[in-house]
Image (cartoon, rainbow, N blue to C red; front, side):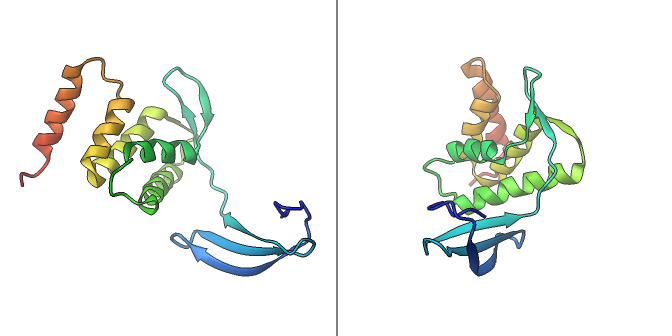
Length: 154
């Protein structure tokens, strides 16, 4: 592992601990040459499917894209970064267990919407408004009415 400060490969692990659900190891390292400390994370390399975009392009699955989309939907909502990370980890796990080599981006979007619907209705509507690309206000209102019917009355 290269030191991010001096680029030396001479360093040692001074502390290790599990993070998340035990699927990530956090390692605190110290460079032997410049004596600065830095953190690395180790996780099992996961084989995830390629994503088939709406226009037919294929690209590798990118966890960060899902995190970014969910974070935008959850802005100014009481949802922690840890909760978002857990949602994305659950989606990744389902994709891995499915064993498919390719998956439609719409399937991933649907999974995100399912999680957001259970997590926060405002975030769900925000995500749905971008993901579903409503053509007019009536489509958007239909989505909201469906959400209101599905929600328990308070």
